[in-house]
Amino acid sequence: MNTWQGDFPRVGTRPGDRTGTVPVDSYEPNGFGLYDTSGNV
Image: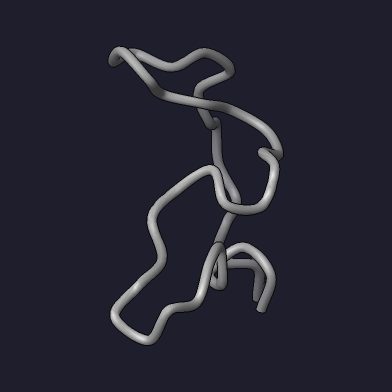
C-alpha cells in the first residue's frame, strides 16, 4: 500500500515553500537534534 499516492502541488503556495528535494539543514532540527528525518526514513 502506497500512502503517498495522489496529485501533489508542483509549486509552493506560501512564501518559503519548497517542492522536490532540498539540501540537508534546510529546516530546523527536531527536538532530538535530527534533521530531515521524515523524508529519509
